[in-house]
Structures are given as structure tokens and as C-alpha cells.
Length: 237
Length: 89
Image 1 (cartoon, rainbow over the protein chains, first blue to last red):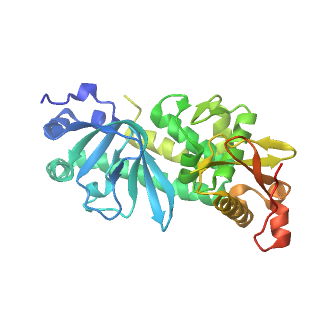
Image 2 (image 1 turned 45 degrees about the horizontal axis):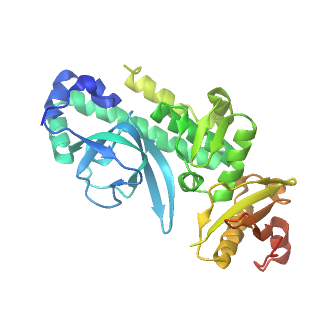
Image 3 (image 1 turned 180 degrees about the horizontal axis):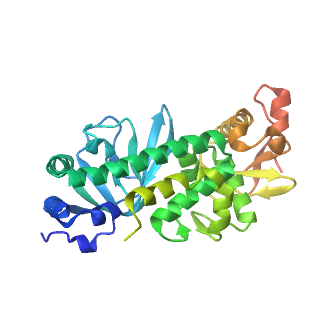
């Protein structure tokens, strides 16, 4: 099997590694598809692989009895498997593919050993963990302070950021799970956004028409984690 | 399982549920609709102030597009027993 080359990588963290750090991981890296709704990490189970997302999105979900709500999302700016970097073997959260794509995965032990050898690798991944914590805090803030329309706008913007396209494959059922609200709430909020010309909604997909006004509607619920990521990780290469 | 669509009637306009949901029967669709109304009343910081919703109705349709159930928000509050009108139109 040929080794993955850093020049072909889309994941921003893998791409931002020093050539030496990347070379240290290279023999362990493996490209894998991300299939819709596939669970990358189960709650409470030992994490075997860390997935650096190349295309697509993994959601991080908190579970309570029958219900799930999204607390964060991970696209090509990050990786699924944060506890591994912090030296913890499992998580109470579920990491599930929300938008199909592709990832580069590495066994958890291989990544931990590489971090033990390289302080620059550890520092890079730690900076992302910080950014993810800011994102989760922002989700808590948005859920407590903003109505459904603003939260839907925030969620559409975050999805567009990670998929890098205007047309987003999203069903109302999925949105209702992600936002932790009932489907008719999503139906009405989507209608309001569409009626104002911010999006076009069709069965199973949402197209962004006016990103600026989505940002206005999302108001303070969107922007802080995104700015923090750019500040901490540097501009996209 | 039959598919039910939970549309929202607001200000005389029907906001269509384009995707619907597979449920065992009309009873389950009714239970879902009532639970939705209850949650919307309970969580105004999520769904908006109750005054914005109180004149709305949930109109459940079947796959043929026929309305099989109408749940007005106010009626539930007044009746307070979880029952609702069935609209056969």
C-alpha cells in the first residue's frame, strides 16, 4: 500500500503538521469512507481510531434516554477522537457521521506514541481541542439564548463552512435531531428562512442563498468559535 | 407503516411538511402532534413566544394529502385533557 502524501491531504490539521510530524504518522494513516449515520465512536466504548475528516461532517451528540442533541460538529478543520489526545480512552458522547465523505484515520495508540515523541504535534492537536471546547461552549450559549430560527441559521452556516458548498443535504428529521426540537418547529423555522430569501428548501436539501443575512439572523450565536479557530490555527493554507 | 405529514397552519397559510414521518397509525400521529404542541407551549425560548403560536394549528395529512387530524394549539390548552378535534375534511 502506498503511503499517503501530505500534499494530497485536505484536513487542515494534517496539512498544518510539520513534515517531520506528518512523516512520523505516515505509515499508520489510512483513508476510509465516512458513511452517513455511521457511528465513529460509541458512548463509553474504547476509542480505537482517531478520524481526521477530509470531506463530510461528524456530529458530536449528547444522549439522554431516547433523546440526542448535537453539541458540536467536526469537519475538515478537525478530528473525531478528542479524548485520545487528552489521554482518555473513551467518551460519554457519540460521534456520528452527519454528512458523508472521507477521513484519514490512525490507531489511537499510534497517535499517542507520536505525541509522546513530538511536542509540536501535541501542541497542534491541543490547539484544536481548545477550539472544539470553544465551539461546545458556544453551542450551550446558543441553545440557552437564541430561538430556533437563529439556531437553524447558525447550524446551516456551520454546515456550509465544513462542506464548502451552498447545497447542503439536510432532512427535517435530521435537523430536528441535531437542534433537539420537534419536526414542526423545523418546518416553520425553515419556512421563515426561505420566505426571507436566505435559503431554498427542497425535500432533503437546503441551499444557502444569502450567507450574509444568515449571519445577521444567527447574530451572536455564530462567529466566536470560527474566529477563534482562525486566530489559533492560522489562515487556511 | 403509513406516512403522516405534520403541516402547520399559521395565519390561514398552510406551511407544508414536505418529508413526513412513518408512524404505526393515526393514534401515534395524534400522540406526536399533541406532544409537539405541549413542547412548544413549554419551551417558548426555543419555539418563540406562545402568543406567536396560539392561533396555529397542526394539520396532519396522509400520503394522499387528505387532512386526517387537526390539532389547534388553543383547544388543547382549554380542554387540558389532551384530547383534540378530528378534522375529516
